[in-house]
Amino acid sequence: MSKFLNEFKDFAMRGNVLDLAVGVIIGGAFGKIVSSVVDDILMPLVGMALGGLDFKNLSFEIGKAKVMYGNFIQNVIDFLIVAFCIFLIVKGINSLTKKKNEEPAAPEAPTEPSNEEKLLSEIRDLLKMKQ
Figure: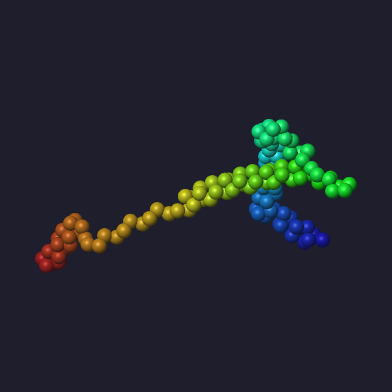
């Protein structure tokens, strides 16, 4: 039993699992913020622009069933806003990571020797001839 618990502890303490847990918690809180922005700010403005329409109350009945399609519209808008925000965050992280991982280009090797190298070669050759 102790081996099983140790394996579980090793699994739970891996970086990926902890990162995932933090991501889920922050994502949940972020989702609430976005839902509040949509529910409390955007949708009332959109409803007002559409003549006082309240999306939460949009529905139709089929027999005794009431289909609340207004909530569906609101949830789709929530999803699109969250997806767009996550896209922007991932795009920003990718651009930072790309800049960090880029290595400076190595300077090109000169094709012919410089004047200094030519002079040094001549001096070397002259010294060799004197010996």
